[in-house]
Amino acid sequence: MDSCVHGSSADVVIVGGGVMGASLAYWLRHYDPAVSVVVIERDPTWSQASSALSAASIRQQYTTAVNIEISQHSLALLRAAPTWLALDDDRPDLGLHEAGYLTLADAGTAPVLRAAHAIQRSKGADVALLSPDELAARFPWLQVADLALGSLGLSGEGWFDGYRLLTALTAKARHLGAQTVHGEVVGMERAGHRVQAVRLADGRRIAAGTVVNAAGPWARAVGAMAGVVVPVDACRRTVFVLACPTPLPQCPLLIDTTGFWLRPEGPYYIGGVVPRNDAADLPLEPDHGPFETEFWPALAHRIPALESLRVVRAWAGYYEMNTFDHNGIVGPHTEVSNLVLMNGFSGHGIQQAPAVGRGVAEHILYGAYRSLDLTPLAVARIAQGRPLRELAVIG
Image (cartoon, rainbow, N blue to C red; front, side, top):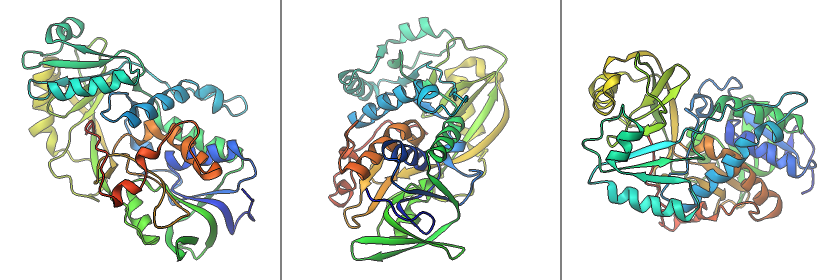
């Protein structure tokens, strides 16, 4: 790829400096030091960025093969982060803790869990199905009377320091020569089937060979600037930090039949539940309402020791929810040839960013995916009305 003049133009302009944009910037410069890359981020503190507010977990318990494969590739990269993200003497430790996911099912949902398990095992995921008796033996603090089945990740699942991943990717991308611009994209200049430039709120104009929408929850608005529809909504999720006087030995990330999730976080636990009011673009403030009415009763039923918990604090972040099929939308747009999407991961973006960033960089530079085929997530499926539904969306 020919290099452009830095500053007022770039080979690749990335709209959004969260973990997806940072990953792409890193991989582009890693593969081709001659390609000019500009990342535009309106909030350099990431105060509202989903990447910074994420619970940062990784799993292989998906219902679509491509998501399992992406997470397997990302897991390998997370494990090796101290090597490939090293910067001088700084070898970033992402604190990867592979304690597994535990997905619970009652009699009605057990067939769905078994079907998902078959897909996961076909892709080599290290997951096991456990009966209620086996669940009780392994997790004696768990109420199993109304359960039919559980699926436990034995390895390759857990959680990590998502903010550390974001800052390490950003620092390494800059070290390799990617430029960061503090500004807000407010428009795009489109001629025919191409975007020629992006315009910033302060009047700056940056011409682009390729424009990448990595705007997370704001992907729909950025897509509209290029004249295309990106079916992504910003859906608020509240994370509660909980203290419990009774230890829960070997606690994995638990996904209950009611939909709540819970996992350890240092001396505490964090968790959340799908809100009944899931309207888009709600203020990014914690919603305490569901705790008393839904979350706490379900917690106390499933884990009786949590009946005596207390709420330490709470925070809120946005899911970039793909309203079409709850899966990522990845690759060149079908109507605008030089517009590339990295959107709509519906809560699992931070765990997939290392692998997706690498794949998109390959497609931009070489015209094809090399390390992992991401074509199942292509934009064309939306125009064709051909959803690739991910059923295992948490929260």
